[in-house]
Image 1 (tube, one colour):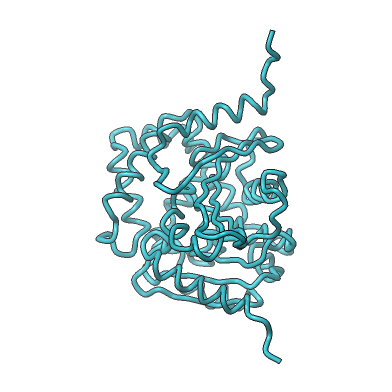
Image 2 (cartoon, helix red, strand yellow):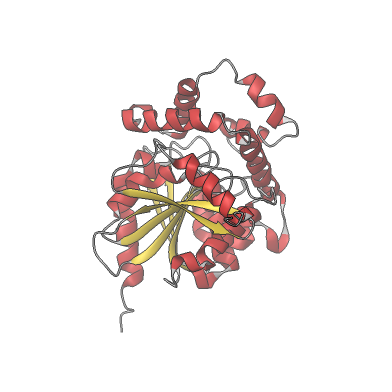
Length: 327
């Protein structure tokens, strides 16, 4: 009689089965699952165009997935070896055993992945983060500087004293009872309508939403809405982000930013309706060795809306940080 599979093996098999036929996997990409203590993570990989490139890990935002980075990963395949992770409960990653969706919980997942044998001792990474992923990446870089070569943050979700009105509904997602209320509030909306609404909120210029982006967002939303943990992972991660905003002292996100040792590239969009570009100057002061890029027409997800411009910014930043000091 064959031995019964372990809990870890069952979790990995379930996550892998969920990715079969997943519409978000582009040509040239692979999606695998990595079993870690207390969680299974799906990891998207874009093969580098040559051997010996340094590794990069990219972390998506609230309600997103690793596919949010596909366009940028394709453009950077000649500079770094790109992998993007689905945070626990998002994309093709199942919920964590602990049910911890705090910023610290997500940061712990990224750290476990970077520490795992799955990476084969490839050393520190060029760490990217967008929105919630930017807050997570900031925590990782502050807590484990040995894991991070450089940090690239696209519209990072760092605390604002006066958030934009258009960002308030995201904060309201974290209120108690929302996992039960949201399905009733949105039951009349199709996946296509919700995808259109989300993309229009996140893009500075909705005309730049490509048919491919819309089709993938619609298909992914349709798939995710059928999952029993869809609203739970979304609302509890929103609550975790709001809670992180209220932390003071050494645990505050701004204080964590000041502790980051890695060179940091900051990318903000003037038309961002979720993270104000006015925070760019404060971020530039908080991160010790930083370079700031402001894109006049970009919204909240510049790596999707303006991937070429973000790729150019990273290449320049990469060349600058890789260059030996003069003299």
